Image (cartoon, rainbow, N blue to C red; front, top):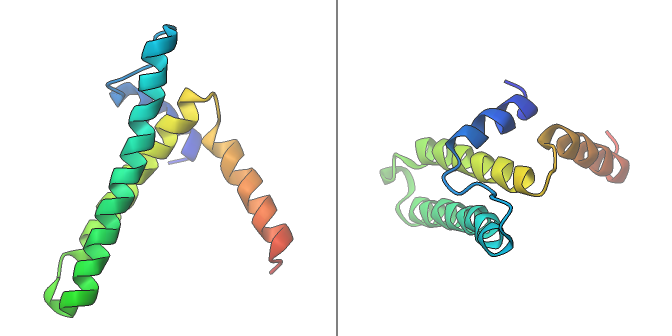
Length: 103
């Protein structure tokens, strides 16, 4: 699946869409930003458990995949609410990073 396709399909599950009302839209934009922070926090907490418990914390690899998927949803939602394209953002970011660190 391509990022743009994912971004469009993910918006079908947005529970707090933009409405055109300025106050409501500020909240609608804040929700995915808070979601990003929460998912990163969950990912970090899982890694802390992995560092502490080592292989006894068997679920860490599965949890990483789930949390990264959730982060992708929130990133798609943030991009959409600011009128940005994940395809274009990804391409621009690769250009920037390969300019800085050529292969």
